[in-house]
Image (tube, rainbow, N blue to C red):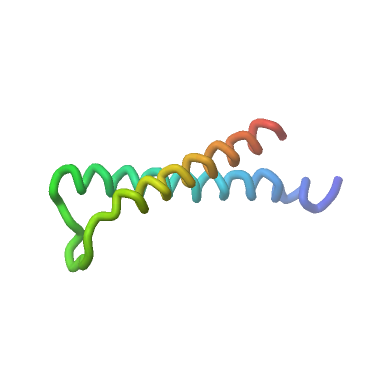
Length: 74
């Protein structure tokens, strides 16, 4: 048994990838919902950038699916 199997590092990396992707999806989704309600974060300057939020949402979904596929394939 190797050290990575003993510590479960392969699964840990896949779980961390899923967590980062899910955080990106959740954060982008909440930004879209808050913008639709007309709310802004306190002290925030600038405007809502729909293209950036859509890009981060898409990247987050890809990362999440990649992480889930890695978890399910092991």
